[in-house]
Amino acid sequence: MYYEEKQPARYQRKIADLKSEVLVNVGSNFDSERSTFIAPRKGIYSFNFHVVKVYNRQTIQVSLMLNGWPVISAFAGDQDVTREAASNGVLIQMEKGDRAYLKLERGNLMGGWKYSTFSGFLVFPL
Image 1 (tube, helix red, strand yellow):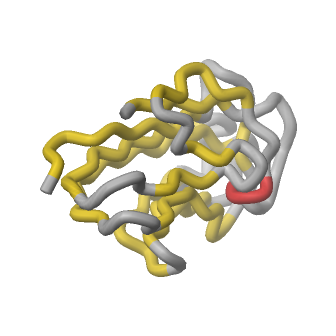
Image 2: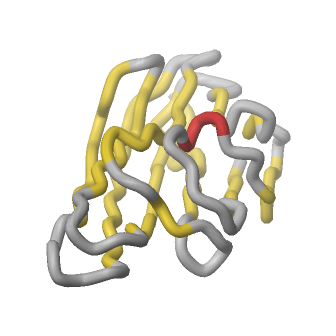
């Protein structure tokens, strides 16, 4: 299982509500209507994301959510830089049916396939 998503070129407050272009979705476990990955089986999964803020004098915070709870976050907040990137990645154990998605906690993002991505894959089935 592997998927990778690129965000559309527009500004959004909630990443979970984005209509995304899915680059790869082997196993069809990524719900593009909700921008949510649904674990097809119990296992260890790897997730990575990369986002870019668009305005200076602002901070962005993006969190990877698992079943509604934040697992990891990334911040970009240099006040003198118009475009700044934030990235993070993690290995997490998921049960069948668990849901993982990104949530924009603060700020505005720059969209487009070169700027905001979210990907994940099964590392080890349990």
